[in-house]
Length: 459
Image (cartoon, rainbow, N blue to C red):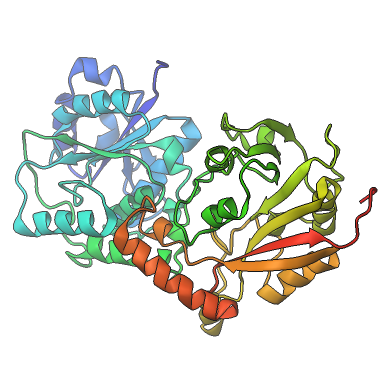
């Protein structure tokens, strides 16, 4: 395992004597693992007594940035210095520095996790907040109010922490950001206790407010940029019967040959393999870094904006273009590529999100149109469709539409369900019935099945 570069950042360092006592309590073998001990304060001067302690260096903020603002400055500094982890604690001794060794051990076990120190004695309010965190977010953490933490810098680069509050609710919001990132969150237990880290915060329920705010964001009742985290390029197979993946798999006959254009890492190949379907995938996997599934029969790295040259003929019963056309600039070329490799009786199965869904109609009504890392307004989308414009795009490319399906809102994503939850399934099933009755208003995605009307060998 490579040597990790760890920065220890001290806050609330008003009293030089207390700071010196705090630093002295760090065991020598632990201190040897810390690359830098940094004081973060806007009151630092060149002749400050705080800087007379040889083990520490100062990071002077240009002004009083507040509780959260000081931590943002520390994270920026850590990123610029190339640290792997940031440990933050109070320099006045209220956070026991003896626990740093436990942090280091936890970092070695879980190098990508956010690690939170748990106080020994918790009030009823603390225990209630922890319970509600667990119920609302699914975060099993005993002490969400603790600000004594260790952050992996790589994960900090994936969350917009600069958009978190400057006051003490910063801790609540960044905890939710790590939850949105689906990052591991673990705890180290302290033999000691300390006061409420959230003393002086705007509200003792700020953590619950942040949790509920995140859930409303997921449901698109609100949109918060601070919860639009960078989850990377990897997509997940959605198992809900009302989602696009399952409906596409069900539309493909057993024993068929499928060409999956824009296959990502080949998600559809796994469930299709159970039906005896052979899947050839095409995508820019070398650029996305996706790990391909073993069930793909063949894979070709190609740019779908360009004419597609593959060492195959019209061999395919189906060409699947699942949630791809909205990412491609040359959409007519993509559809010509699909025509080129379909058998004479073959079918195109193509899906895209519905920009006219009620969620975005309401958003526009209140003056909001926010792009993000996922969903209908994925920031990588270059073209957005309504049901009518999507059908027209496909028909204009020389296809006859035979069937249209719709999907429900992705409740399994919103609620982090496996797709097998009965409650989530009932909700999705009800919504799906409404979407079929009024697709232009309620459909989350359209799935079209079409056949070629103009069979052209040079297509």
